[in-house]
Structure formats: C-alpha cells, structure tokens
Length: 483
Image (cartoon, rainbow, N blue to C red; front, side, top):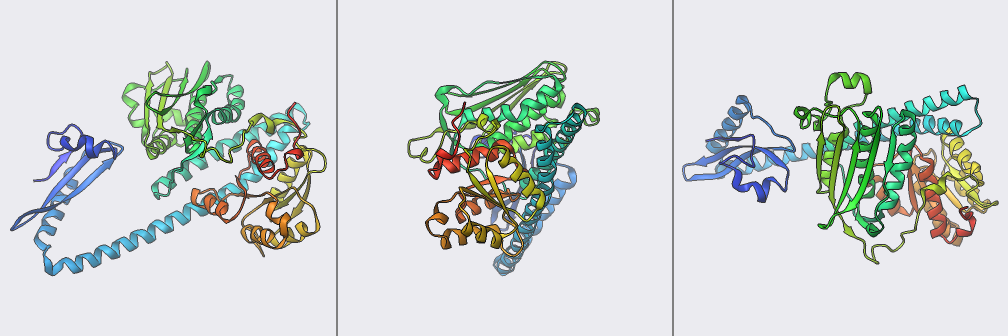
C-alpha cells in the first residue's frame, strides 16, 4: 500500500526514521509506494518534501501508485539494460538543464550588477560631495532607490541560485567583530533615515576569530536587519552575537516593529509570501528574505527560530555551528577596521593606482573614489593598455576588471605577473567584477589575483580590501596612520 505521511517525523508508519534520516535532511513529508514482483518487495518509490509540510493530494497518491505498479510489472532482467539507458539519458538532460540554468543565473547576475555599479557609485559620490540641501536630498533619494532595487535583485538572484542548486558554503577564518561592524556600517544610514534606533552590539572579545562562511553569515544578517528596519516605524532594532557552550554562533535580531500573527509564522518562511497583501503595498519587497535566510542557514547546518506577535515586534534567533580558528587557520589574516574606509586622505601622497576597465562610468567612479582618498590614478581601457601602462609607470596597486575587449583581466594579470619581472610578481592586483558567483570568485583568486571586489562597489569594502592588499604586499607605509 502507498504510505502518505504529511508529518513524517510523527506518523506511526514513518517516525522510526525521524532521527536518523528526516531531521538531518530537513524532510517534513513523505510519500512512499512499494515496488513488488512475484518474489516479494524489491524497492520503493519515495517522494519527499524538504523544508516544508506537504499535504499529498489524491492525484499525487494515485500517480505514484500507478508508477509503482508499472515498474513492478516491467522490471526484470530483460528490461534492466533499457531502463538504465533511459535513466542515463534523463540524467544527462537534467545535468544539461542545470548547467544552462546556472549559466543564465551567472549571466543575469553580471548584467544586472554592471549598470547598478554606475548608478549607485555615481550617486554615492554625489552624496559625499558639496551639494545644496535640495540636491543632497535628491542624490540621497537616488541612493535609497538604488539600494532598494539592488536588494530586490539580490533576493531574486539568490533564490535563483538555490533553485539551480549552485549555492556553496565555505569555511574560512573570520572576525565576528568585523562582521558586526560591517552590519552596523551598512544599515545605520537607513535606520537613521527612518528614525529607528539601530543597536548592533559588538561581538564578545572571547569570540575572537572563528571558522565559517563570513559572506553567508553577513548575508543572513543583512536580510534579517533589512527586514527589521523595514517593518519598524518607531522604536529600535537590536542585533546581538554570541558563542554558545555547544560551539554554535548565535545571532539575534530583535525589533519593535509591526510583528507577525502567530498563524502566519510558518507561511511567511515560504518564497514570495508576506504576512499580508497590504504589507507588499505599504513596505514593498519580494517576500524572499526569510526564505533565503532559511535556506542559507540550512546550507550551513544551522537553525532559525522566529518569535513574534502582531503589534509587538519580532525576534529571530539564528544558530550556526562554527569552531574557533587555530593559529594555522589564522595565517594571513590581517586586522581590518571598517572605519578606516571612511577617512579622507587614506593614502600617503605619491600612491599610484592603475585602474583597468572598459566601462567609462566604472573608470570615473573608481578614479574619483581613489583620488578623494589621496591616491593618483591612471586609467586603462583593456588588458593591452594595462600592460603598457604598467611597463611605463610605477604603480602600487592595480584594480582590474575581468571582461574587456581585446584582452580580458585574467590574461592581463597573468602577463603582468610573468612578463614584468619582480614588479609584476609583487604588485597587488585586485579583480573588480560583477561576476560574484562563489565558483567565479574562487576561480579568479586561483588564477593569481590578490583579492576580489564585487560590483556594485561598496566604498568601505574597496578600501578595506586595498588596505589589506597593500599591507600584505609590504606597502604599509603607503597608508596614513589612523588619527
């Protein structure tokens, strides 16, 4: 008989597999149909609902029963070879479809980020400039609108990555204090503009450096803090970080916002769902934030707990397994202060940076940002120009785009490394690209780039990365001491 278990962990027919199979794989519902022939049972067809409870419909139960009967009637030695061939054809087609989907996501990721880099980069430079009050407000409106659009694009792209099964998690050493500092820096302006107090408590000193995926953890915090600020009209948003005795990183985001009704808590964790249709009209958004958080945390073997009441705010507690970094893990890690990127004249006079990009807008933004910090810049529009400029000039760092006509960034970097002697080997070359998929970033670093900066460019990330690259390359004297 067919076993239909919407609540697989507690169903009498399936609960014996709860601890060994369902819970480790986050399986909520199960639909099984046995495969039998004249000699007895020889297998089972199993459908599983991961991450959410599924009430199996009558047509689904009938369909899997029919498939089981068909296979039971047909499976024997005569048909095994043909069946294996068909399975292989299906697997090949599925792999091809997966590759096509992955390629589409990567292409859209690049194509959407590239123009957003120009919009947000130029707008942020204007905001930092000497504008009249009305012009300042207009520039800030562009930044806010651009940030909102970028957030929506990131949600859609992230969801597409999960759908294409191309999300990867890494384990590297990172500082919890730096993560919390960056979250404070990124979200403080939007909180202030709403009149909401944002309190990001620094990580405890004993937390130190841990092993985990800092980008994914920041992504989780970014989604949670963005939601908290968005749905809080007055009061505060509090962000805490701690390490439990069990060795888990515990992140808490608590707000005094509109809250969520108890009967909607499970539903809002599903993609494209918000607590009420009026919320979309009032606050905007895609309804993907919590769904992405659930999937990211699940990929890191963690858990998400949400407590809320309508009109009384929301508290989200995320628990992620981490381990303390050893001395060997910490090799090459350099202290990094987010506030450093906010100072003017970060560089000593005479620092020269070669900026390579075929997009005039990107060149303008990067050169303006660098020159405001006291550096001298030289522009090149493709790999050939970059090589010639490097041969003729003395540069302390190179910011290199990846996709350019005539010669791309990877080839230009390789030629500089191999053809320009000791200077080419030692100069920090940083990839600046909208290719932000994890495998793409890892590929560029493996090719020989010293670091990677994603587009749209965040000023703080640009200067933190450049500062670290100069220090690693022994060029620390090119940086001004912090006041």
